Image (cartoon, rainbow, N blue to C red; front, top):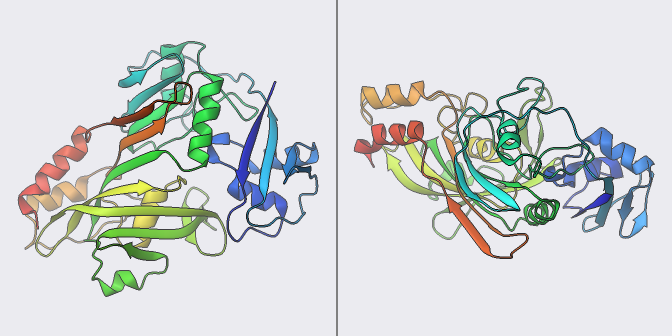
Length: 343
């Protein structure tokens, strides 16, 4: 049995076909660059309805790509009896609130204790896979040290339907983040940052391309010439300190790239508290926040980011689904510590 992954080539594609499809193939399909090259050679890739095999072939913005892949095969994964915070479940999908510190899928550095291991125990054999390798039910991910809502497919129909919604960017995803500084439309520095603009009076919009960092392959980096198109919007919910030292912001994704919010907010000069990879640390004004509040911010051990809202159309029943998860205890405690200093 085969499945078809369909997508559209985005703006300013690389000149080579293999690089263009590797850039734009939905992340939910879990197709690596080497796997895509093999599929090209096998004649499994169509561009505008025509089979192509030349990885150096030309491609243009707007071209329609279809990749045919074999149904997922089993890999060695172990079911583990790990408690799950289940928000919703039916025969086709399950929605969970992932805790901080849990990896979504097993990897060389995290072979067990992951969300997938827990789901395999909870759901048994009712998880789906796609992309030539069994990746049970996973259609999107959040980082190990980001908390919040994930939807996981339990049937192939749900998997394909959810993956298509993520590909078309119709899924509602909202995050809460605690960031350094105060994103302000009147800030001339912010208006001078390439890719940063404001919609209306207070919606920060960040539009760039994102790709692997040239020297650190574990990181993502902003680019304006290569990578995947990425758009993040954000608005300030609360400011802390006078003058403002921190802001609680609501971010929502038009695209869903790896580390997108963390990279984009850092690019705008408002890195996330606790983000050792992109956010760094800032010296907070001792007159604006108490010593206890400053210490709490400095000691926060992970990126202050929480996937708070997830909304989508049920891929089988076609019902509107929308779920919310409150801030986890560590973020709620941090916000409470700085709340007496609301600006």
